[in-house]
Length: 351
Image (cartoon, rainbow, N blue to C red; front, side):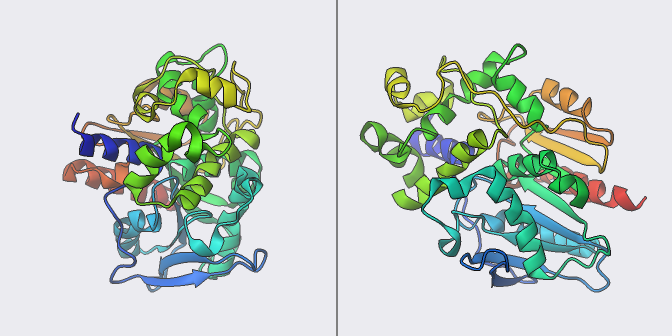
């Protein structure tokens, strides 16, 4: 694989999307929000409010690069045509005004509350019960699952469209425990590198040079973004696989297993998910993933296992060339199918 293509694939799966995002887009309003309960933080956001809006859709990116709220702009305009307001923000660590230095500030327990803080700050939610729809990708989807496990999301969400990430319990079970999936364990070995103390400087700055720079991120910014992985494990939301055979991304990053073993603060035999989501019956869930995803594998079994835990469930498997960045899929027909699946999941609440 040519170096440029390899860098793009690794960046898309680990830290950021190199396709670039517009700062704003015609038809949207871009602004800064500072939640009342987090006055020291300022998030860069975009929103749209069509006349007679039905309800609000909140969009949450994950480790998708700087300015990643832009990955939702096209979808937000489509949702406006369907009568829905939308809000998307650059998340904690991805925007200069909301990038605390303390690793503990990236715990999923805290990031999960950002969802509700930002929705409240926007004053866009007109639902009489305070409920809203959520569309989330990558670690944004993991945080959303965790918010459901904590009880916050169960009471607040009208629907959930989870992009690239299956039911959180299913994914963690694939990483650790008696039903672990060896392919997913190998694919996720890069996580054991990203969560190392000061990981961007380890092994002669391997992560910084091979991952962060391809996403045009400075080391300090990239390190804060990677704290999300520590936050997922430390909150109990996400399992960590045992140290084992390296998959594609870990091999490319190239930190030797013995270095990982010597530096890690986590058990070499893995870390279990401690906070389970369990059964979801309160709202419909649509899970979409891309065949070409080399980090969060798009296995039909993960879709089937997710469906067993969700009462109202739809699964969309996108063929290659669609990969981890499903909203950036180059196949127009499949991207249209994804947009339609998200919109239909949202509309299903009113049928």
